[in-house]
Image (cartoon, rainbow, N blue to C red; front, side, top):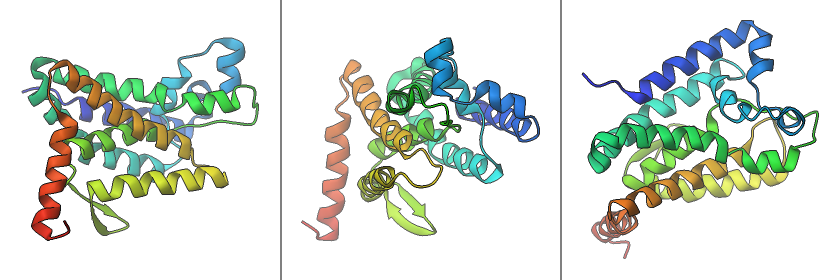
Length: 215
């Protein structure tokens, strides 16, 4: 029986996050705090912040999304990349934690009031990787069914608008850049095996729209 990278990530993240709910030191030591990176070279915070969450709702939503999308993406990667599939998947998730926070770091590198936590950037990368691999996958947004290729642009537009307004305590920038990175990663990885993922995805969308009589 093969180990599921998705389940391992969920278990480790859940255990550390739950520990952080009752131990502030865990939060302080792992949270993404730009000045700690700038002044103390604590680059590990780009990754460890993905192991902690603000509350049960934050943790549940991220891990549920990771479970539903991550399982499919992990399986698809195994089909595409063979024995290296799980490691390619893990590489995407871990590097997405870093990449999704780079714009945030650039903007807040000396902001002593800024902190960020959660795996949302990496989870967004997994979701968008899943949408690219299967653009006809059905998602539920506030219990409203929506196809992946329709959801993706709407998600980016809404996230960009919310990020511009700068309201709330959600790092919409990490969502945006994590999503984009998920697409770029899959396209780049598929280039190595000469698999036309973009053409495949567009063909699925075109066929669906023809069947529906939209084009």
